[in-house]
Amino acid sequence: MGRSTGRLGRIRTSGFSPRAFRSICATALVLLGIIVVSGAAVRLTGSGLGCDDWPNCNGTKFIDVSNGHAAIEQVNRLFTFLVSAGVALAAAAAWFRRPRRRDLTRLGFTLLLGVPAQGVVGAIVVWTELHPATVQLHLLLSMVLVWAAVMMLARSGDPDIGTRVVAVDAPVRRLVQLLAAMTAVVVVAGTVVTGAGPHAGDEEARRFFGSVDDIDGEALQWATRVHGALVWLTVLVALALFVTLRRRTADRKRLDAPLTAWVLTAAVQGTVGYVQYASGLPVGLVVVHLAGVTVLVAVTAWMWWATTEVRPTP
Image 1 (cartoon, rainbow, N blue to C red):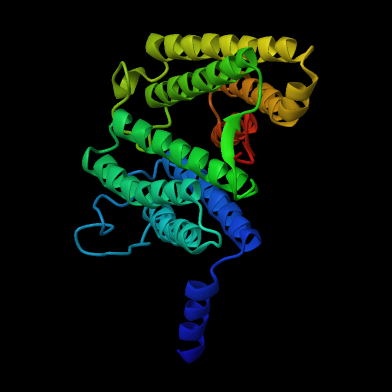
Image 2: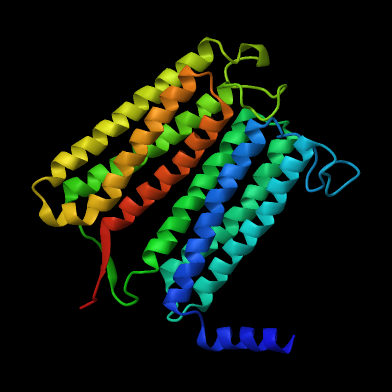
């Protein structure tokens, strides 16, 4: 007890170093990525109502692993507590970091609010018996938290003193903003496809645009076509950004790594998307696709950060 109290006292006095804070941010980001995949496993195994109550697993037990579906859902819920601890540590580290920076504390506060908000949405998902709109919101909020965690990690390496300014030419900045917006639209459209398809978390759960018996019908086909068309439009924006960067050496050096990572991730995502649709949406490929969505959002956030820099204040 004495050692623990002494360690906390030293943290309050000397704070977290920038290096220690960066490690904590990286850990929080990894945990947020894992919870997306574990949540997908719940849905794809039909375990969304394995626990039909919240915060208890059911009407009689707080924790219940008496059957496979309940166990899968229970493990995901318990892992959420680990994610909450990691995010809370990142937020606290932002406050106790030395020197303390307002942008990092704001991002830490965003994460700190986001995790309990996910808990509330998770409860609503159960209470609405996996309504596709609530499940959709659950994933989209996870993407917001991943974005905030990437920004927090990236900014933790910036100079502590100075003013953040746009570091690329205006046309490049606008194309990056458009690419980020289109990526967001593609992610939303992808959640609509999932909500219209067979992997709704439970056989009896509602679907977008149709009944449970119509999961392979025309609605799913049209949702998939719209999603695919949006993906191709987004790729065209990325190609336009590549062309724009050809004569801007400084901007190209700044954005080369995140833009290349974005294109490679998008190419893998597109390939997996077409293969999974052609093969009847096998669970393994859908998991890979959802993990790829998380990576794509993270890379887009990285690119957004790369368009700015901290310069000394005159």
